[in-house]
Image (cartoon, rainbow, N blue to C red; front, side, top):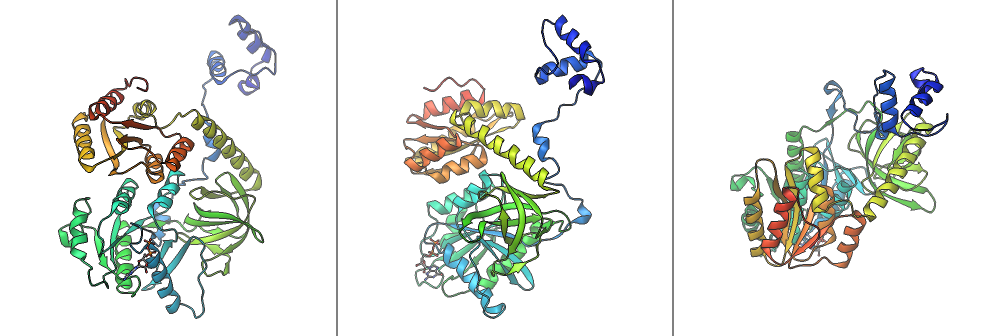
Length: 473
Ligand code: GDP
C-alpha cells in the first residue's frame, strides 16, 4: 500500500528494507516511523494525519462572524444546600407557566426555557456545582451564567465557596441571588460583605457582580433576577449560527421503557431537525422525534434550546458532546473511534497516568503552560492560608501554582470532579478523602497527595515545578 501511494514498485521498497536489514514481504505491517523514513528516502514528503482528524469538521466548527445571531443565555443555579436552589428553579418555572399558554405543564427534561420581556432564558434543571463540573469534566461547557444562591438568614457557607470556585474555574460569570429575604432575620448586607472575602464584589460594594434580593417561596423579585440575567447576557454578547448542522451537549440521558433511549441535549449552535443523524458521545442514531420542555413534539430546535432526542441507539452520558453528521457511515465511524478512545482511556486511567504531580509537570512543559493548578483541602483555614502563601512565593516567571479551590474539610467527590475539569492535582493537608471521593479519583485517574508537614508539601510542589519530583514518599 505504501509503495502504491508513492507510485513506486513494491519490489524497490522491499529492496530498500533489505538493505536496512529488515526482511519483509508485501502485506507485512510496518509502523508509522519506518513508513515515514521510507517515504523520505524515496523523495516524498509526508503529512501525518492524526486519528483525531476523524472528528475533524464535526465538532467545534468555527462560524464566520457574519453568520452569528443572538442566542438566549444558559443558566445554572448553584449554592449551599438548603439555601433555596430547587425552590428558585421551581418558582421561575411556575411563574412562567402561569403567564404562558394555559394548562402548559412543564416536563422535567433536565432544562427548561422561560421568556421574559420577549427574550428567552434557558435554565439547567439540575442545581449545584457537582453536575455542572461533572459535565465540564466530560468536555461540555454548557453554562453561560451561574446564579449563586445565598440564603440571607445563613450567609456564605462551604458549598457557597465551592460554587464560587467552580464557576471561576470555568470562567463563568456569577449573579448573586440573595434568597429568603422574606425572613425577619434576613441580612442581605452580611451576605454582600462576606462575599467580599471570596472575591465576589457586588455592585453596591464597588464591584461588577450583579446581585438581586429574592424570595423563592414568596416569588419576590423574580422578574429582577431574570432582568439581571438578560443584562449579563447582553454584556457577554452571546451568539451562534442557527443556519448550520447542529452541535451541542448532552444534559442527561436515560433508557425509557416505552421510548427507548431518551437524551436531553442543549443545542449550542446550528439547528437540530427530526431525521438528522447525530453522534452523541460514543453513541449515534437518527433523530426520530424531538420533544420540548412542555412535552410537545417539535420539528426543530435552535441555539440554547433544550430538547429531548429520541432515536439514539444507546444512552450517552451527561456532558457528552453531540453533533449532526452527513450520513450513517460517518456516524458509525466516529462512534467506533470514540468507543475505542474511551476504552484506551479506561486502560490508561487504571494505570493512573493522569493528575499525578509528575505527569502534570510533563504535560505543562509539553504545552508550554505556565500554571500549575491545585485543589487544596486542609484541616483548618489557617494551615490552608499558610500553604497558599508558601506556594505563592514559589512562583517564577515560567511557572506558578494556581489554587483552583481550597477549603477546610475532607476531600469530596466535588473536589475530584473540579480537579478533573481543571486538570488539577489534589493535596490533602491533615485530611483524607472519603470513600466516594477515593473511588471517583481512582476512576478518573486523579492523584491525591496527603501531607501533614507544610515543609514537605511545599518541597514536593517545588520539585514538581522544576520537573524533578522524587517518587512517592
Ligand atoms: P436547596 O437545597 O438549595 O435546593 O434548597 P431548597 O429549595 O430545597 O430549600 C430549602 C428550604 O428553604 C425549603 O424548606 C424551602 O421551603 C426553604 N426556602 C427556599 N427559599 C425560601 C425563601 O425564599 N424564603 C423562605 N422563607 N424559605 C425558603
